[in-house]
Image (cartoon, rainbow, N blue to C red):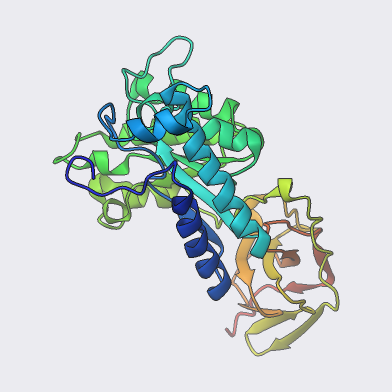
Length: 334
């Protein structure tokens, strides 16, 4: 018990065993895409956290800070291994404090994952016991931009998704201007090693605080695919086969053969072949069955279509193109 709350002691073997049993049950019983850990860390301001006797018996030559970090890292390795042994496609992720540690030119003012709560998250990515990190970078200016770069530069090929402080737009919080969030999103999107941004939290997005819902619709006009976990070493699936098409009244239905455990993405453009690297051409994602129906549009040019297969690791196949099939210009009688 610490500061009025109960904590599972990270150094105790029973903690890893209990949490391991929980993640195994969830992974086995449910068709999940991922497991996300929050508060997988020591309590904040834990100088008086009562683990002195445990440390004295199990220090193994480490300082208390290193020992605590090793306890959390060992726990992450255990949970990651338990999940991947059952379903290797399940994405294991965690939320961390927004600043990993001080960076070269900017300090964290004593509030960082490494020293404050003993999360050695960059080591987790380096050692491969995490698939994605969601650092909670709910700050502005030099408390935000240098630390985004630090996370990206130490991602070790894993996914880092910037946790955006969208809630700070609210007048009862920090009363940010909407322009602040726009700047942050552009920086995150421009960084070559950041996998995306997550808005915290949904209430403030769906509540359209300061127009944020409309802003996000403008900045994200197209569907998005989950980035692949390429480090799992699984080859992308082959392109779909057995393409077919049929016309009925005002619609065109495209069909293809399906395979177990795959989903399908449909792309469309006015040029052939359809460029599936252009997100503007992505019109449908994660289709489970082998068909897609589109109404004849009233457009100046016919549209062409392609389909890709996507496995549960996020790997996407080469496109299969309908060479002689397109949606024609809408007849005037329609």
